[in-house]
Image (cartoon, rainbow, N blue to C red; front, side):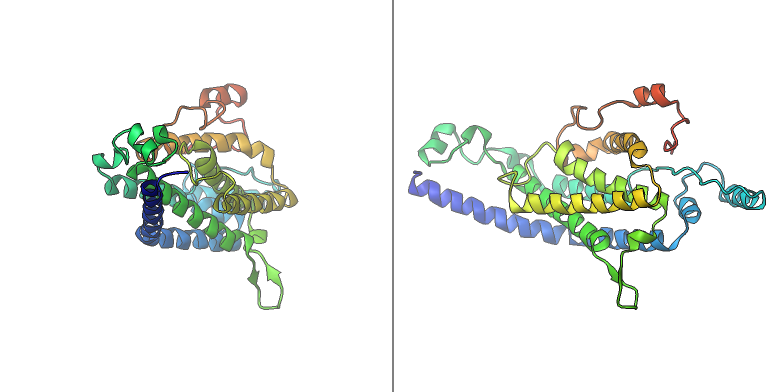
Length: 299
């Protein structure tokens, strides 16, 4: 059993953690609201625009918009009814932007002294009955953990609201916007969902909660898994090629981590290269060629 002083210290630590959890919610509220609005907008546009129009809006092709329209008209006039290949862009900008804003908030909220241990020595910690003194939690760890949990909770709630929940179409029937998605929009949504999972549970080097099986972690994983299963089911029903898209997803993760490593490393930890991708871009192009894979798009 720990000493009375140790019990008081642990109680104070819990109070500090609770206060900073509320701080994270308040500090990220504007960014969360903005990201949530953009997710809802993405769902609305994707459920109302045709696949060709959605592709044009997201500028998946290097040709001009006028050329794309002329090409589509030519295909109609020539009776070419072949289905265009689904293309994959990058991780949605509102997801990347949100994560960068979380990292920026962490960077501007800490000072060098926040990296100091909470006690002067391990002997002092032992006397107070504090365990795992060699892996002491600093103020930086506390702030980072609160921001990670808040951002994961916010993103998973956005997916639950926009992907898992359904809308009424006015005829007392429940229809999900996802069912109106074209192949390109469905693939983009799956990329974003899998990136969020990869970012927090594979790329992230820090702990999200005291226990991996905590209710918070399990709830977030359940939402992400259910959203992923629902999108994959829709893609399979609409003739999408999920297996063909997965290798390109790995490249898209790596693109974000490489381009944003200066910002994300403070939030997620230094990347050792093993979590970003199981293969590199050179190996991918050796196997498929730069333009042979039906899902590969240069941005």
